[in-house]
Image (cartoon, rainbow, N blue to C red; front, top):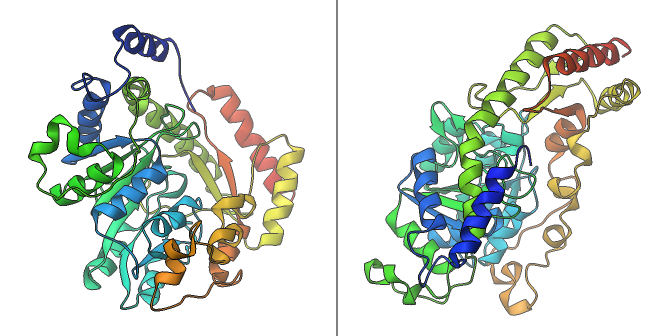
Length: 391
């Protein structure tokens, strides 16, 4: 969470005093409906469904595309585990692909991982860094794959002038406490496809058939789930959306300054970014020659009082720590387990993506801030330079 304050308090008060905390059965036209319209305008898409989490958005996106048992979905080796669990939730199997030095999905390895069972790919804009979407979309088109963008860490980012999440067939966002804008826990799915939208809408709301919009849905109703968001959370999100451009502008300004001041350093290189203008700029990535050098640099940064970390230490964001996936426990019951429903068994191992592990080990990440003063930023840059000089 970057910025939250009295405006959000007043928005919550407005909803509570209205007595309409539920988006349906009297809440139509309220906070959630308005947020969905506003988020569609922000991302440049036809349809938005606000829901309970980014994970829910990924699942509903796959449902919207008709992904299911026997299908394979390619995901990157560096992302929160939910990206790999979403295919399992619809009965499909995640296939893990390498990330390159940008720490986003390597399109060349995606192509190597395509099989006759592959139906979709989920590029993840990790830490707000845009994926190489031109290359990803090229591979997807040539192999007739659907694309669900995981923009859960990239609210408001863009790639070559298009908002992240709007480039593929569908896009998933998270408004978790740790994201660029937040309501504590929430998410959204966006798409230009009416068919994807209707299927995802049905799946996200088990009572969809009883809503006022039911008569306009052409998709036959099926048994869905419940990922509905509340009016309170949507009210918070509408305030947060008003803060989004300012937050991104401040983050980008700080990161540009850091990159300008550090670009001449010989101890490290600036991590590559596929679109610097569209980068959300939440994180500065520094690339060392080896994992050993990165460890030494982290120690020097610690001595200088600089908060930093390595993505190799980010726990559930690294595929080697995805126990339910690597150990192929895909559901609570064997009859629902995607690994038992596929006609083409897959194998996983901790060393299956060596380039990913090497790239993660070599990278040092430093978080940016939209509220840091110019004086504190100058001091931070000086400390980073001092740490680098000790390598």
